Amino acid sequence: QVQLVESGGGLVQAGGSLTLSCATSGNIFVFTTMGWYRQAPGKQRELVAGITSGGTTAYADSVKSRFTISRDNAKNTVYLQMNSLKPEDTAVYYCYADRPLFQRIWGQGTQVTVSS
Image 1 (tube, helix red, strand yellow):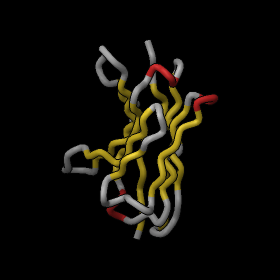
Image 2 (spheres, rainbow, N blue to C red; image 1 turned 90 degrees about the vertical axis):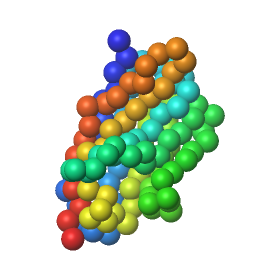
Image 3 (tube, rainbow, N blue to C red; image 1 turned 45 degrees about the horizontal axis):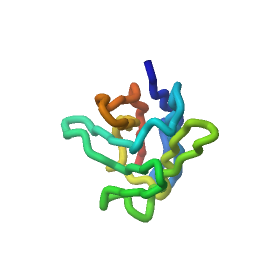
Image 4 (cartoon, helix red, strand yellow; image 1 turned 180 degrees about the vertical axis):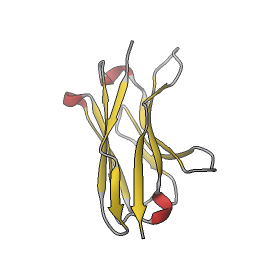
């Protein structure tokens, strides 16, 4: 069974940076799209960024120009580079992966806390 393992969360001051990683246990090429959602306390889970197997990216308006999603096919890993972090970016960040005919796969989540 394919799994997603996230890392890179932590505590950072406002204006700082963090890089999240999402490593797949299988071949990354089986996934048509991968990306990140986040969920803050008391709020719904929201899409942050996504990247297709062809490299097309999409971002939530709230993170455009601050966050960058990328993928390293050789390492079967997707990254989320987060710059100019704000307290409102505080949330649990979840990696996801989609592939044809299968349900979406989720990572276990990693906490990002931005202090003011």
